[in-house]
Amino acid sequence: MILPLQSRAILVCCCSLLAIGAIFATSARAETYLAVETGVTLPSDLQDINITSAGFTSLTQSDLDLDSSVLYGARLGHYFRDTRWVGLETRISLTRPGVKQQDITLTGPAGATTFTDVPGFNFQVLTWTPLALNLRYPGKRLQPYIGAGPALFFAKLKDKVTADSQSDGSLTLKTGDWRPGLSAFAGLRFYLARNWAVFAEGQFTGLARFKFKETSNLDGFDADYNAIHGVVGIGFHF
Image 1 (cartoon, helix red, strand yellow):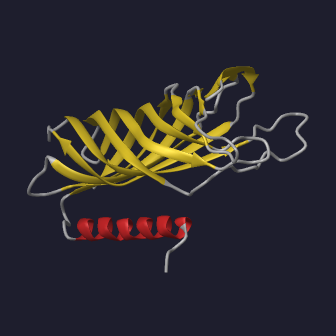
Image 2 (spheres, one colour):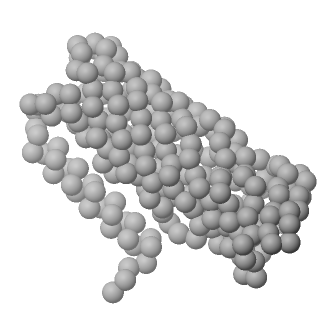
C-alpha cells in the first residue's frame, strides 16, 4: 500500500524524532541544549520556473522576487561526552517571504510576453532539519561552529487578503505537503554562564523544488527555492 504524501511526511517526522531521542538517551550526562532563535530571511527569488497548467507546453516564466521576512525557530541539540566537538541537532523554522507585485515575462515557442504589475501573494515556508551534523571548537566561552543536514520544506501559497476581497484569503495552492532539500549553517556561540549561551548564525536553506497546482486564479508551476537567513538566539545547556 502506498501512503499519501501527508502520511509519509508524518511517518518520516515520527521516525526521526524517535531516532533523536534514542541517541540522546544513550549519551546521558553529555551536553544537551534547547534553543530559540529569531532573525531575518534576506530577499531572494523563486527560480527556474516552468508553467505546468493544462494546455501549456514548454512555457517558462521569469523569476519571482520574494520580500525579506522575519524568521522564528527552535532547535534541540546534543554534543557527545567523548568527542565534545561533534554534535547532532534537530531544528525547525518558519518564514513568510511574500511574493512581490512585479512584472512577469512568459516565454514559450511563440516568443516572450511581459505582464506588468502582476499582484503578489503570500508565500510561507516551514523548514525542518530532522538531523544535522554539528561541528564546533569546544572553547570554554567562545565556540565557532558549522553544520549541515537534509531538510524537509513545507510550502504554502495563498491569496493576499485585501479590503475588497470577497473571500477570507484562505485559498491554498499546494501540490504536496513537503519537498526535500538541504540546510547548512555557520555561527558563533558565547556562554554567558555555565547553562546559558547566546549565538549569532548565518543559514542556507534550499535545493528544494516546489510543485504548485493550478487553481482558478493562478497557473500551476514548478520552482526552485533557496534562501539565506541571519539569526540570533539564546540556548539553555544541561
